Image (tube, rainbow, N blue to C red):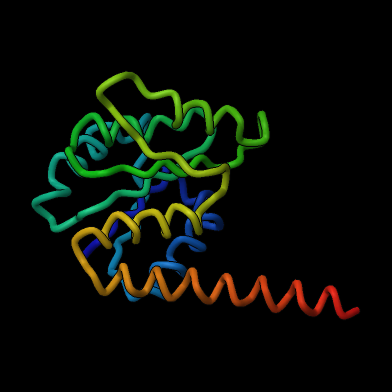
Length: 160
């Protein structure tokens, strides 16, 4: 099971590393690359066309501003793509979000919140869990632990 995390710029890494931490916690193998839809279009095309043969099963594409990386990758592979819009200095990331979520018919990209790296990784894990039951169980355990934490916090809050 392998996830590729692509980011349009090294500046996106401060967000992307949070996705890596989640994948590490679930023991999911990943590779992280800097590939720009605009500055290295031939690299983006080659990567997306060869990803399946390279053993990649899900791709997270993180980009800011025009944020075309997810769409360019999705146009060239049958693999599931998760768009991770990165907050930019221009419109607080709304420009990135709209660029990622407004894909034309036939080129789907699942999209998470602006800077939602943890959810991008969790969604990748859930997609992989269709094939890997051990990830489904790990996700179930994760959600149960999250529930216990909230119940405990509520109880402590009520007792204050």
